[in-house]
Length: 603
Image 1 (cartoon, rainbow, N blue to C red):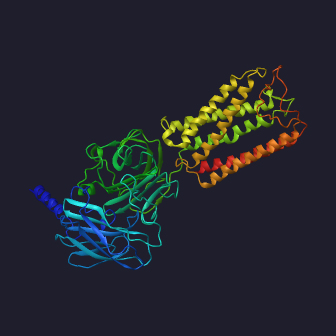
Image 2: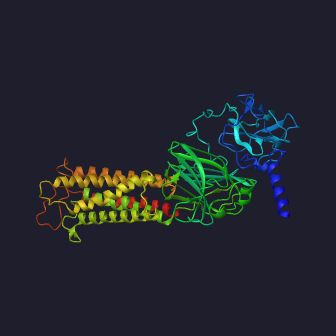
């Protein structure tokens, strides 16, 4: 009997939920907190304003009315918002105290920046007055949730024309549903909402990863954005590793052009699981967009299972694995490609917050820093292509004629150093490649962007060149020049692309180096180019045949009694100057390299 009575009371509470208007807990998501779900059809209502522009403190008349002879409505909730924000602006005054009342949204007492119904009478229109803030805040758009019946309602779908701020930029232009930006923004990070940004302090759409959260009552408004042609996901986790994660996937379907959100669960390093019967369990008010390579979504998540139940949302997959956001959790983010609306591979691009997040606060969260394996990959590549490759090339290009009577490891000095440096370059590159592929679970990395593609090309070229050197013909062979040119071309391409890959990798969220590191890298490039120019000038000034270059002359194999003398000209001296230039270059290069490695290590 008691169970029957309690069930009847619960049903009555749902049917007659909030007859006196929207509570302040609905300020963020504007969800009426009753009924099974909001409607997806076009609402038969409209918001009409009497002004097209506004000034500070100016009044605007706002009317919510049905279109044509459509159905009446019982409830409503109206706010004025700026583009891409959920913060209510200005102040409302009611024109009919019998049917309307104001709602205080935000931390300010008596803010009166929302207006809702009183009672359950059927209405055809409602008119209210809105007063703008003393200082203009940008273009304003009025938004309304309209309740036709307890089970039929439209959440924040009824919108007015923009009331323009003449001092702001252009008004957003309407766009097709598959390309209209939903307006994820970093405005309010650290003050009105909590945020995670990678790179640090970036602003959408320039962020590789961005997520924000804003708790109001028993719901949390999430914003998710990132550079991707497939999906960007945010995960809620009890630890800072993948596995047992409450995940929300912002997915762009290239086949249909739609962008939406799915809730899923990660059991470990495998594809997240979606509930096939309730793929959006626990979430509502979903909007998404894909614009110029940036995927963005907004959605409201119930704060826990109990709140999800009040909204008639099923709990999440696998028997209600739905984290309670009254507790603190790590924020994980990942991205990758899709096939239709399905994730086509397990994410290899991922970042994690430096600590657990309090979703009730407005904290601006930092990243946990780069994984050690990523730091090792970047460090080894820098050592290879800034240090060993550069020294090896300089020895072969400008120092063949130095130390003519000396040997190192039974080879001419220049050749021994050149070979050691280039072998080191290849080995360091291979080790770095193995490390990053291990981090990526040995998945093909073209999805990771230009850095991954250029990096793979560098690895291939680095392997080709020593194999070519092993098969080089004798200096007396007439076609030796073909090898010389091929060896030079492959090596030069590898060096250039190696440096390009480093530049591309420095801005990736997995490493997220500060701008100063990029300036250091630019400084090294200038330093190296300056060294080559000075050595080339000195080369021409000391050669009796200045028109010939040493660059292609690789036929002085030490210990070979048949080896010909260098054909790059007879040098009249300057060996000490050239050694001094080399020493100065190495000192400067090591300075740049050590500074870069320090940035990598501290990040």
